[in-house]
Length: 113
Image 1: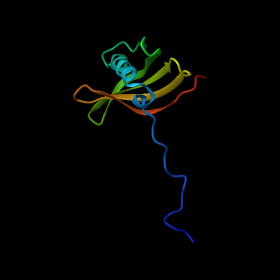
Image 2: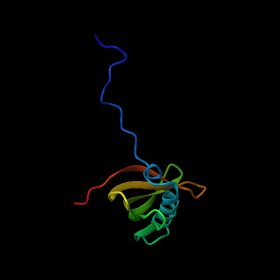
Image 3: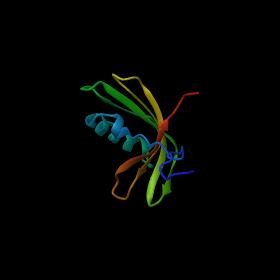
Image 4: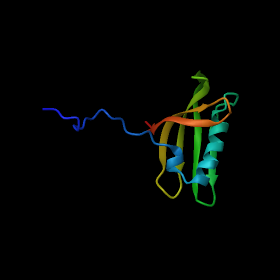
């Protein structure tokens, strides 16, 4: 017999968020660096950020060219976040909407090979 209360493995885990990982002031600094790093007019170079008050720091490295997606401009990136906690390497996609606000999508762990 099958009941409606049966649990299956088909539910995806929630995608982690950089805003959830970082303290609010750290996220404010990281978000500014993200916008510079992913700017489609930029040179695609690594952009560092740090917060001397918390000791947190990180960097965003754009991967590939910017591309349009659902009325937004998107660009893949790699990031490393460190500080008091252990360093984390992640990959994701940042998208800028028409208002110029960047959001992070598809964030997941990234392992250096």
